[in-house]
Length: 595
Image: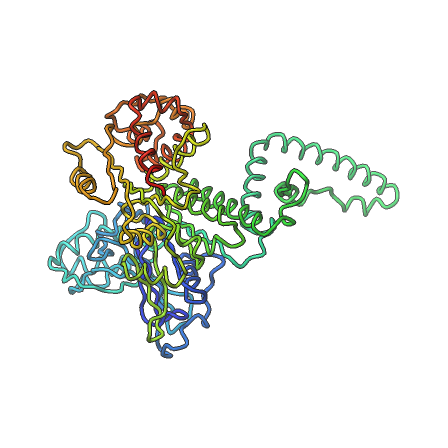
């Protein structure tokens, strides 16, 4: 199951119902104390996370006394069936528990802001006589309804079978939007099964001491110890028996000597082991550096990086154990105590995680250096409007302008030439390849360090790219466009390429002679980087071929090719794959336009 949206109402600062949509990667951006943490806490409360306990004080102070606190999560990619018991297999659709769009919307309702929070399904549900509310009826009640309708189920012991024939007999169920309680009978049983399919919610907070004694560290360490103990269980059993035998021998010898002094007392005592040893509690695993400095004595940035790594390891372990469930990784302010270089690596790591099946990443931040690296489609801007109410907006130009203004994300005014490519994978390709050429002594644009060159994906992949794109398109600087030919004839971008080349401002555009950038990679570079053997031609679909060899989707394969395999390229390998010097020609045109 995959989280699609969250709605919160009367929860802390969110009085009016507020909806937040979620993608594989979602960045909650806003100023301090605007409500980012409350969104993560609302998710934690819904999923029953141990760090998120609902308290009556969480009710919005501006709500009325009788108002409920409601936290609603909507899910897609639902299980095809729900197994209530061995003889009762049904589905959310068959029980009319889905929305009009075919999603599952569950609310956790705290009545008047109190209680433990009852679950209800917001769905298109029957309202017709004999069909209304039958999900909450007992078997005897369902049999009575079926008898009154003069229908008989295949199995009268099965509530699922009885509901099915009742629905069929009623005919027009008069389906209407309803909030269906899941508090008893089969409603409760279905809820329990739904909860077994819900994503695992893993939360990493910002305000924590960050030592190796924390649960996020100790839990995976305990798992490592438990697995090690399980692997050597026979040897430990032998040790336990040896200890038992020797201890009993000492005890029996003691009793023998005691019988010389007090036979009656000795007869009343019997050697007995009360419990087996708890091996897990005997061993303790921690981390120390080469200089034997423990992790809790290291800098806060190092500690936090280690903790995030432990956090990921534990969440991935849970995902392995519950393979039919997804995982939502919620990380609050991951940039805390991190150097900007590490912030960039964190965003890249989160992006890689978000591409895994069943993984969703949610991060919060108010730091420009991290916010500007987030994909624009992932950004959710949280702010207070003029009326003082919290709003959450996304994917609108005015929203991106507001974020850039609020956080201080500024365009690079030093640009002299703008290099336009199709997307982030092309950016990685050219950055890595150019860096290799420079390291071998060749003249090439330094995309990483030369402020005169701006490498821009045309889709505005990150907030920084979006800001630069909107600023640079009006400053009259020459542009170098590079497009993939793909497998279309004529190429998809031929009209765009012709239009750029028709300008009189020094701009120039190219279309690859090969299918796409990945076709310029040498197969030896791919083999060394990814440990696979592939044949690369000018026209083959390299990401698909590599994805099949690695057992990953095309998108993940494309990222690996452009971020890992390209780093194994050399000038010699480039010459072999590009004997006409096509790529070198593009790079030379970029360098020539730097003033």
